[in-house]
Length: 302
Image (cartoon, rainbow, N blue to C red; front, side, top):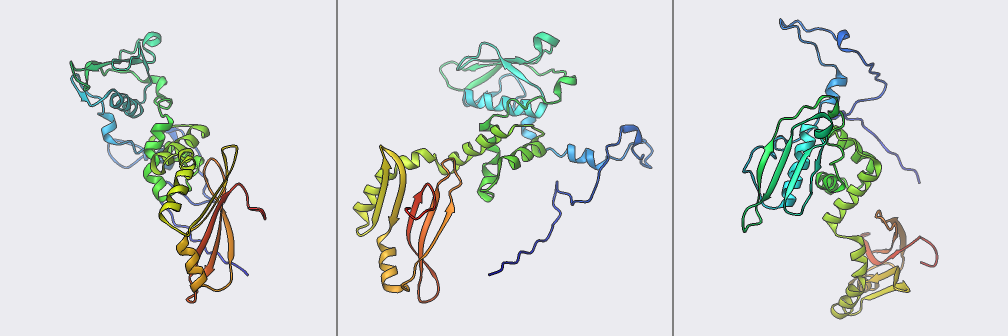
């Protein structure tokens, strides 16, 4: 059996075809415009390096004294957005659970005056900014500023919507997206854990799901008579699961050909298991599932 694949290259934003070479050109070598103010044409390299998609509200997430926040976690998140948008680093000074005091990372070494102090209102959980100095000099220290505050939780919050339509998004893709969208450089490990956190927020925790299998087995036997569920464990450690619902069994016996098709696929999570399936064909050549197995590898025993 032969399979033929056809590919069509469609140019999209931030993507460029091969066989195109760009050479770096200094500012003095740029071709001038014909406009009267003698501006220069922006090179393709410059446009690619300045296509960040930082939301406008990040620049104003912190903006004035007496600004209110619902919780201290919201203040910390706003600080993270603000530092990434404004390209600077900050550090906590006497960091407390409800009183937040932060300074520019270079306050003592270079005298940068930026600072913020927030504390809760009396008899309330609402946080309020009590002191805020927004003046900041970036200079040479803004090259990679804001990058360290891009935690795995921040990355997870930014890629959740993408994971819904691109579930196979890899850590390298996440690194590239963070660089092109927010001009944030992150390492592979942080990108990988960011995806794990996002998947956990979207689909639940894998470990908790495996721990719930015993409860699931009990409920299936109690509510779906005739269903076969077998959980194989080794000293309490999950090994494999076999499940065949009663409706699938009856459907195979009464409406399918006496022929089984076996197949398997990888489960792409941190446990890296295998999902095996046994399916049949009914009289209309439609697939009819019969049984499933979750195990560690595809072999004769499983």
